[in-house]
Length: 72
Image (cartoon, rainbow, N blue to C red):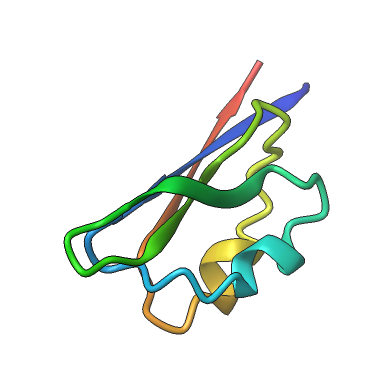
């Protein structure tokens, strides 16, 4: 079975530290060109290649990333 993942980032709490960007083995995460209410460029999914490994959520210092996984 193939596993498809997706992330949800609490954009108002993300500080754009980019730790999650380096932790993603699929290069799914990048910083948005938009800014949140605090003026930070926040993390977001750049493509749909997420495998739901949760590396990004584990390394996030503020715990603002939630990972979802679905089997196909």
